[in-house]
Each structure stands twice: as structure tokens, then as C-alpha cells.
Amino acid sequence: MQFTRRAAFLACLALTTSFGAAAQNGYPNKPIRVIVPFAAGSTTDIIARAIADKMGASMGQTLVIDNRGGASGTIGQQTVATAAPDGYTIMIHSSSHTVSPSTFAKLPFDTVGDFAGVTPISTLPNALVISPAKNIKTLKELVAAAKAKPGTINFASAGQGSATHLNAEKFKLAAKIDATNIPFKGSADAVTEVLSGRVDYYFSPIAPVIGQIKEGHLVALAVGSPQRAAALPDVPTTAEAGVPGSEFNFWIGMMAPAKTPRDIVNRLHDEVAKALASPEVKERFLKLGADAWTLKPEQFDAYIKDEIASNATLVKAAGLSPTN
Image (cartoon, rainbow, N blue to C red; front, side, top):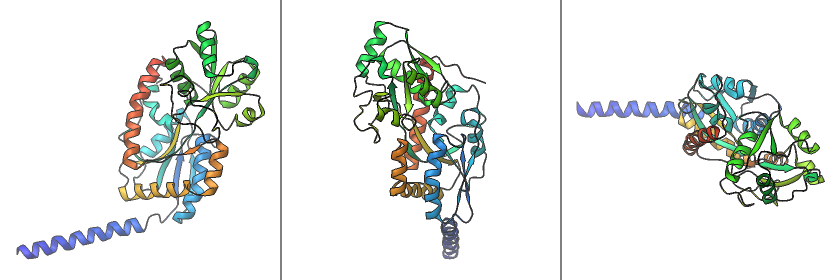
């Protein structure tokens, strides 16, 4: 009797294992929808499209980009949080994913509990740029100018609570300077105002300013990221340039609904890593000023959780009030 039960148990276990293997081997058997919570042409969208083609070719199925912009990314986030956890709806989002819990009084999803991290895809360092007409050539000179006349220096941002804003706020706190945020609708307007000299400086994504930096129309004093940018290897980080504790990591990464099977999450992780290793993606990232970055899924989950807490502290220190 005991032998019979044991045999039955082993048979069930073998059957379950074969079904699991079949599910893994059969994935994907239809196109995968990739929710991007921002408009087409945004940095997140460009990064998503840069790897989607490579992943699709490797996986034998099309990855279809579905732009669900609006409400600082929360519309797209909700779409993924409530999607079937079967690997056929995934999300490529930016680090604003970890900011929204602090900038919104109430969210229709749990930023930690409703998502499974797959992997970061890239970091996008912001370059602190200033017009050469300001006659400031180093970060220490900028800090000194700000401290000499408190409250008179200002900086551009691509909107309240954006990565460009939070990067500047973290720098301001670390440098202990009094500077005023001048928010714009996007990077194009912010860059224009800094070029004209009407706004003093801007922590800009590298892609919109790399041409002006190389041509001498803008001076890059530093990058706000933890490491130097591959696209600007001679430009120091803000920490290297004399302001420790000012590092801000703006990233773009892949997530899935929380209960997506781990074998599918791991497969997606491996496919992202494979795409990032391709010469075509490396070349495209260099032009965008993006650096490839990956973590194991469980490491990414832990990173997101930690960053939600650190961004909450930053948002509070910056005096940003949550919106309804």
C-alpha cells in the first residue's frame, strides 16, 4: 500500500514536471505585448524598441510595443499590474516607477507587490550642462558661485518630479546650495533656455546635448550618475568633482505582473542580457548616451524596494507635495 502511494506520488511529480517543462519550452508561442508607460519617441520608448527587435528575433515571436502614456507612467503601470501573469504582457519603465509612490497620494496598484522585476536594461546618466557664457568651467566653481549669492542660481528640469528634477535636487542637497527649479515640459525647452543663458544649468539626458557639448555650445561640468558615462568618458561624476552623496541613478528596466512564473521571468532576463551583448544594441546605446546594466530578477526586486525608500526621503527633502 505504501509502495503504491509512493509510486502514485512520483508519477504525479513527473507529470507536473513535464507540464512545467512543456510550458517553459512552449514559451513564447504568440506575440508579447510590451507596455511602455510613456509616449512614442521618449527615452524609455527608444530603449524599449532598441532591444525589442533583438529579443523578438531570438525568441521567435514579435515583441509589440504598446505606448500607454499619461499620469507620469501610472496608467501603463496599472495596465501591467492587472494583466494576466503569463509572460505575454510585460513592462519597460523608467526609475520613475520608484518615485510615483512618493509623488502620488494614492495609486491604483502596489508598486512592490504587483510587479516582478526582470532586470534593469540601462542607466542613462544626466550631464550637468551650462552655457560657456556663464564663464564657469568646473563644478566647484558652480558651487562657489551659488554659495556666494544664495537663491540667485536656478536650474532647468523636464517637469516636477522628473529624473532631471530629482537629480538636480539631490545635487542641491549634497552641495548645500540654494538654487531654484525652473520646470519645463521636456528636455528640448530646458536645453534651449540653458543655451540662451536664461537658465543657469540643467541635468540633461546626454542624447539631446551631446552634439552641443562636442561643438562647445554647452559645457558639461559633470555627470550625475554613480559612474562616468561611456558617451562622455572624460567628464567626471559629481562625486568625483567634489560633491559626494550627489549620485542619482536614472535607469530603465523590465518588469512583469507579480505572479509571472519564475522560469518565464528568468527566460526574459536572459534574453535581455543577450540583446544587450549584441553589437547593434551597443552602438545604439552609445549614441543615446545609455549604458547597459543588468541584475538578476531577485536583485532587481530588492533594488526597487530600496530605491522607493530613498526616493521618498529625497522627494520630502525637495519639498514636493504628493498629487491626488
